[in-house]
Length: 371
Image (cartoon, rainbow, N blue to C red; front, side, top):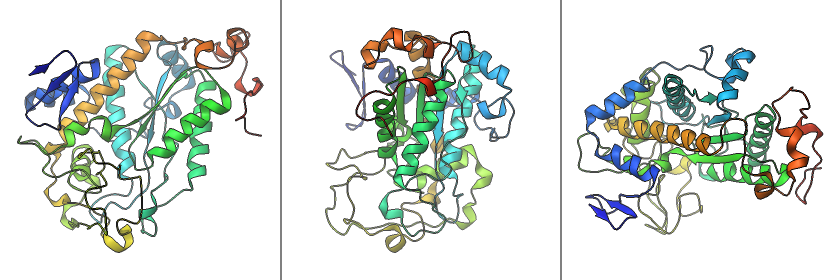
């Protein structure tokens, strides 16, 4: 049913889609049959083995001449961001990293066939930042927030200097505020024109993680190392998941029951899960199993629709950004920075071309320059 010209509703009052290109795509995927979802996954080559070591997949395992050739057609790059984290004894601690790299590899495979191959970089964060309540958990390796931010800031700077002027951080872990902060600080510190975004992929396709009355639907709300995450693992890298060891676990709030939302903001509550501590036990005390939920009921089938959705959406994001700003172009310098077009001209040339200058030669401006 259509309401006015702005929203599409569904049988579930919590699920609705805006009348935009993203909303219309979500609506199409929401209404797609399982056979149509399978066809999308087949187009993207899902499931496939990890391509972290496959030549030609990431800029780090591709001959530089080929990287340059691809960048001249497409200067947008996806940066996968995961972590090392205890996800229960049944799952791998690199689950977040393999999730995000493997569906991005699907995006690369698909866009290559479409003639505009996506660029991928190795994840700059093998360990990641973590919320306080993960402290003390074996298998979870916690980097300080400033390490996470500075790593991302200088990853973005290096990519920009190499001609990748549209940078999309694709987050698969509970340190979103650090990524948002890194983008803001990067822009304040360097004032470089470009398109810089973080997409928290679970939230981006939250509708497809809601339990609904459909055979391929998840049955519980997304929290941590649960039905949802285990289902994605079973779809993308089932050999890293051993369901013989699966254990379910739940935690109870110490106070403020119903105030804090779950991982994809399913309930539209007053707090996101990351907006406080002390209302629930830390993981070490409350759920030492490393699980919050029921991974025992996970199946690969339940992950198909959300994975199809995020790959289609990331493809659309790339297409729409490049349609507005084709390779080699950026948003107007004087609208998105305090610099001038004349000042930026040599820095926006192709790296190592005649007259090009590196960002290391660019004068710093503003009150946020790092000394």
